[in-house]
Length: 363
Image (cartoon, rainbow, N blue to C red; front, side):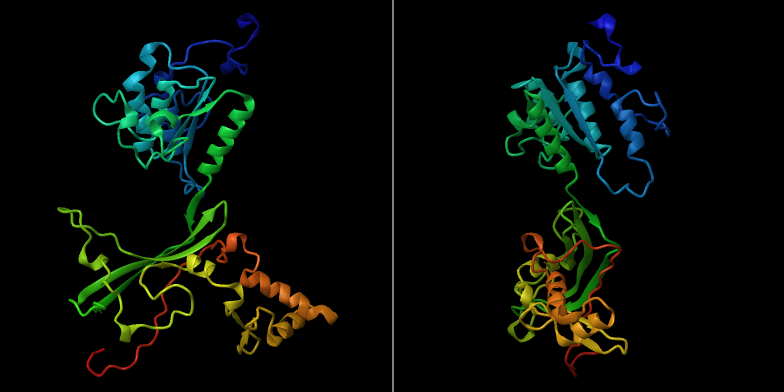
């Protein structure tokens, strides 16, 4: 067989050979090879070092390595803690998600240790048992994050099982959130404790917009800051909301199911809102406000008129056509009830309500 099979480097398929994983992974180079030409990278670490530094529009996408093997590391000096260190460095230094898939290698301790190391778990100078070391992010690259000691590696014993393993990994890699634009920061000065306690001098929150991929769910999230005391690790007072946040006299209508707060996700609140309870508006050519929908979710007369004027609906079924457009805008058939779609090039800001005049405070 070997006489009639070209090696993979010549375009064929290797029919037999060792599994030198330590050498194949390689060390992260001190100087990155700035090329993707043939033979410019001879190790996994070299290529990933190059890929992690490419300045391209898709740089926000995650970088992942899927290692597939039908054999444990051979010879023996190609495995063990030196290999585990190199695998962990791919995650911890290059921020690369490392998935390990075994083909006809069920119950392989060595394979499972490789997968644990690929999750960033390798503590100490010689990490002989990475599955008992702390990972980079909660065993997120394991087949079963709840049981990494025996189920971190993906195991397959047939072509169909291999297909399912790889499909699952690809789906997991592609499940991430993308920022939709620059966020903003809000500082509230002189925040009173809703329970009558000490006043907070400054309370800081951030506002960001993101889109989940591949579900295309949108999020507009307001969250408290995360500044911590370098000595104790505790949150700084400026990042801790009072409890309760608001006194009864400061409570205001939120126009939705979510309670008044300085920490929320508009996508989650909107998902809890019945689609017929939403109120959307547009404007006409004279800049006059036009309600899009009635309280029952149907198109308003003004919106039907605007659609008709633009030739988007017509005839005796104009109202029915407009109703379907409005139902789509309101999210009647939104997947899983998530009505906030993916957001593009969005920079959300907080528009404050104008408070009632208080003669005891300036301004």
